[in-house]
Image (cartoon, rainbow, N blue to C red):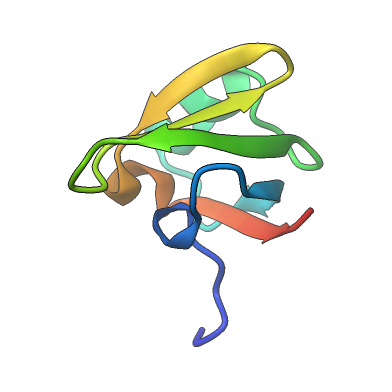
Length: 78
């Protein structure tokens, strides 16, 4: 998947939309239970100086994710 959009490649201020999950892990189920479901728009708020972790906001909430954890997200342009 050469054109796969990943959270780690987005800059603060970028928006993306969640299309689903790459796997059905307990972690992806946990994210879905927090409201990260298909169609949700994410805004990249900020990232740590070395890029890990990254803060995203959606539906009025902020969430901090490590890029390795966020790799289960299927993202598409917003």
